[in-house]
Image (cartoon, rainbow, N blue to C red; front, side, top):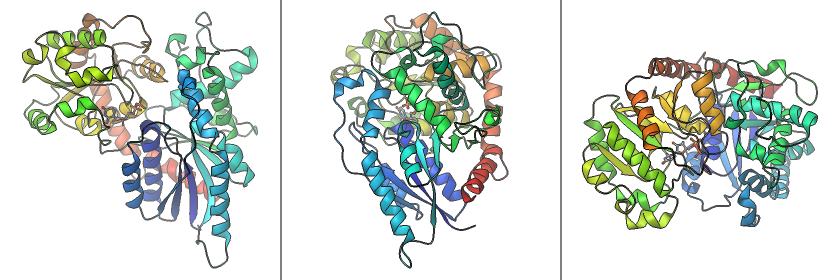
Length: 477
Ligand code: UDP
């Protein structure tokens, strides 16, 4: 096989960017005839990952980074639908991507110059579906790297089918939805909020992205066959040929993301926390962390604190308050009177947490999580069971799947949303933490089995390892 070069177009934003780069690294590790050029779209928000990306790229000799020029983001009023905002922003990069791909192809075709590899395709984030047409223009196949799971893929494959029949957004009175890859019909309360939003472009953006899933030449998913065994090959793409789906997970970063600048992060001493964790009994500490955008209002923070105090478990709680000023004045002002004093020695409250490292620590016995797919993947990798508390995006669907379909998590909430008017009560939180830590009905055992299956899937001969091999063979034609 000749050397093959892939052009990657990740979306900016921690959860998507790092996972996509980690997949790129697993391709490089799989086959030394692969090389990868990353076209980096600048983040429309303050960028804290720049140095991490640079260091990932510079530590892989067959990886090259091209930073695309700055483009003015759309007006912030459009953030009423984050999906719409992000795709609109990425669309504004089309001409830069055209230029960069054109230059790469002309460079590689120079006789005696360029390189010995041929460009075999473009791997894009799901928010970059507009780049499928750019790839076509240059006669290149395109592959979507799905940073989420096969359950989410089932939703995306069903959406255009439903839209062609019904032609409108979801309404709460609609019947439950039967999705490919799910055993039972899915309650509408667990679908992403954007699907109910016709007004701000959330629904139409989802349908547009979902159509891209059938337009692309293949779908690469961060899951593994033993976790989500559904065969999507029985469905077809827009060319009426069987969908090509490659399960390549678990793809994850084993090292924590760097601390995102956040005032609350400075309030704790991590040396002290690691030292404390090292002295806790195995699987005795509950860790609470809610993703890169997981903030809470003050009332909700107090309910969590009350639950932690009552359940008497050791805890490590990554808390970021919705109003950032409060993090500056000190958590004492917000948490119940004397909470930090009374729980001293039994728990810590911190801001941004080095989550991947924490989940790998043997003292952690349970994880109260917002159910972002990276967090679920990190948790499964370490055999730590989750109590589900979804907040935004596709997290409710992830929570439903983990609890109801896969039996791999304990239910705290399945359909909670960030905009919920009512706080989740201390009673509900306490009960879920107790179930998670004391009596999970066998969930821990199942999670430990899935940890072993996941680790085996990416080893030589494992299901995901073989799937990466198939992807490379298909690229080579
Ligand atoms: N993360 C972290 N510390 C935090 C919050 C999040 O290291 O305090 C990391 C977490 O380990 C994961 C990523 O940020 O790798 C979050 O991705 P996920 O898909 O779970 O959720 P998102 O942030 O995209 O909602």
